[in-house]
Image (tube, rainbow, N blue to C red; front, top):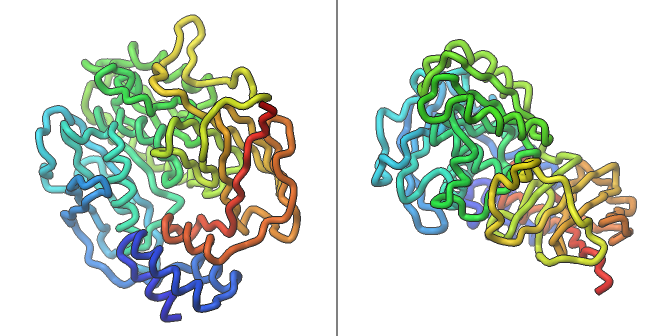
Length: 408
């Protein structure tokens, strides 16, 4: 019990990983450890209001952010979380917070609001901001009773564009993405594109999109063809054009209810039965229970896979600065079928909620059986991923590394 409480009291994933060693040494059974992790930590009462906080991401960058805790916060209740990303990034020369830190006129349903800050040297479309959102969410979950399946990223203008970027780099933590007055193709600008944006990754989560007809920067006449292309290519988008709207949020009162209804009806599936993920390196190589480990072309892989990035008669949305690898997964019971391109090996994270560990697990890659056998549960693996993810709804009892069949 003492080892488990020390694990829950850890202030970071790194501290939790160290504390997990004592939980494993305690001799706890897998079933008991799994049940305790699902139950989660005990939360204490917290004051409501707006709080200004700071964190330093693991790349050494200092970030300020504001958290809005609803009136009457109860530690017994799980709370939806909305990250709200601001616009005007290029006009901010430093990391200092602006305004009161309150959500203001963009308030919706009762929830915890997070207002992070971005600036010229750390725009929303940078790896640093992905680290920032990850770190903020981890800290929130250590203090407040966060509903892990209802954490969303929204943003206005540059913040809306940033929501597209984060969706293409980090899908695991979030239920949906809600870009408002943003434009995905801003990210294809040669001064911005770092080669890590893969539109096909947008197929994993639903989007709620608003663009306006009289927007002086991103009018629907310019943006809508790309939105429709995404929809036709398998990206789930709830699209709400505002024909008379401009580059502001004056339309929010008319859209608010639909926005919050979308969030309410699209909770995150912690273990989606289908996944597709593209990455070029280990910086953003995980999507839920899939981790891409090694890259490289293999014999027998498909010559082509349908790709959201490709537009008929036009060409790619984003140039490929790096050679990526891609894995498409479908799970039915204990059988996983994978299509891969440019991937030499990947790891599957197996949850007791989804896989029957008393039976064989079968993995078929590009039409060939790559694994067929029993996989043993591990308390060490369970605690390792629980320390990293800090998520009661997403627990993994085993890792299965799969080599892509290759005759060469």
